[in-house]
Image (cartoon, rainbow, N blue to C red; front, side, top):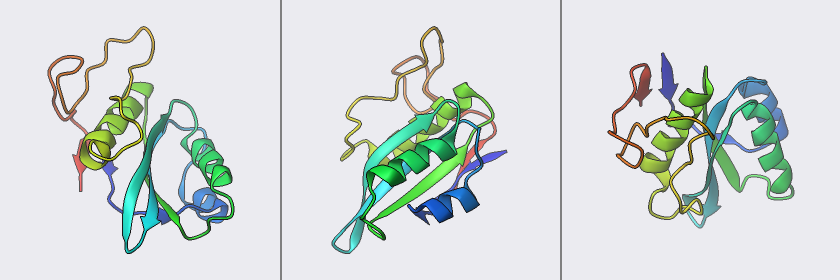
Length: 131
């Protein structure tokens, strides 16, 4: 069973390499420190390598050590990565997210969002828990 964790990690190369499996799909939430709070600044998925996607985000934010954190979950399939991105979008980013549009399905798929009816009936897929 995959769990969408609320645990966050420092966005740095060492932490990513130690914590996140490579060559696997997944989704992540990137947060930025704003005063005394953390604000969501990105919600993304990787269809092939969540570790590489996080390393790229880390490289983009180079020089801002300690200002960014991430939450993530690996997936066992592309569809599960899409489901995770949707869950992150609806739970963490729907109000103040630069991803102003709902996560997109992969081309040629008929996947439904697990949280809303944008692509059909919303439901939390079996095997994904939030906690």
